[in-house]
Length: 391
Ligand SMILES: Cc1cc2nc3c(=O)[nH]c(=O)nc-3n(C[C@H](O)[C@H](O)[C@H](O)COP(=O)(O)OP(=O)(O)OC[C@H]3O[C@@H](n4cnc5c(N)ncnc54)[C@H](O)[C@@H]3O)c2cc1C
Image (tube, rainbow, N blue to C red; front, side):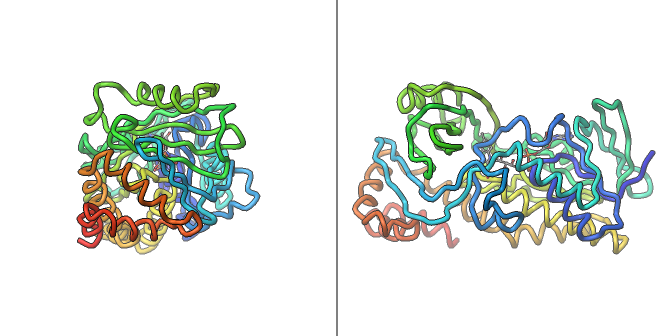
């Protein structure tokens, strides 16, 4: 049975960056990255939007082949279809995740990690010398490795977490079901993303249009099933698309889950760390998780490298990873989660009125900060929402 130092399960953004960083921090280590799918990055279950600053911590998007579109505007759409354009420069990017995830995995390989696609981790067993045995199956048959540290970067449905005895359950109210089409031949500003809220549009979530090019976009929505009227995400999406983009050709369809909760209480065990969606490291307000996953992967990879060099892969040592994550973003997510809960108490009429207030601010001055300050003055109902940010 081959030994490896670090075995990473899942070659999404969290896993690829974890393998890359572990190898970069300690080139002498054997790092193995397993991916269940036959191709890294496919199928795409994502709207592919990321912020500029977070992305640049890992790679430059300028002229990169894995970028689909640069975004310089955000358009919020109130439940009654009132549009509010927000002026921001260098807001973000729409990725081509098939290429982007493959790019990240290639960085790990270039650093010296081994990547095996079409290989699914199927079992994790603790062995006597403090290592983990990882059994996998796939196109090349079954295989087992013995690893000092396992990083579970296996996404929303993580099994690594469960095998390691970590509590990765999600409250039903914090699980969004998403459906998305790639629509072609539709009309919109290709430099803008569009977000629409409303109980009849996407209860507990929102609908989005993220441009992939002129006339081509990811068009989808996420909702909380507990709050819906019995229709599923696809039925809500069909209604939204029929109303807003009736002539669009639906050239791709995908579904997926987004956990809009806070980081799990414990992301580590003896010889194990969870990173990315597997540990619920998604921004609970926006549902964005790509950059978070990369940041968590970076922390996990570096922690693994340091722990192995020190000869201490105990849970106590790896708890430093959790602390670093909470300091970096986890504590912020607790605040965002409280805001999400407070916003849930406001109804469509409130958001329609808010949109009209905000449209009173000249477009060029409409930054998110100004909108919020202005909205607080005009809509005192928002004060408890703001207060929760500081609680
Ligand atoms: C519809 C939708 C739209 C979204 N839009 C956005 C967006 O616009 N912006 C944003 O930032 N986030 C978005 N997200 C969230 C984002 O996709 C995730 O947060 C992000 O992909 C998390 O990265 P990850 O590496 O943790 O997990 P994943 O990207 O899910 O990667 C996990 C990988 O592990 C592999 N795997 C699973 N089990 C095993 C196993 N047993 N053995 C081997 N491999 C395994 C999977 O095949 C997968 O490749 C969206 C999500 C959905 C569902």
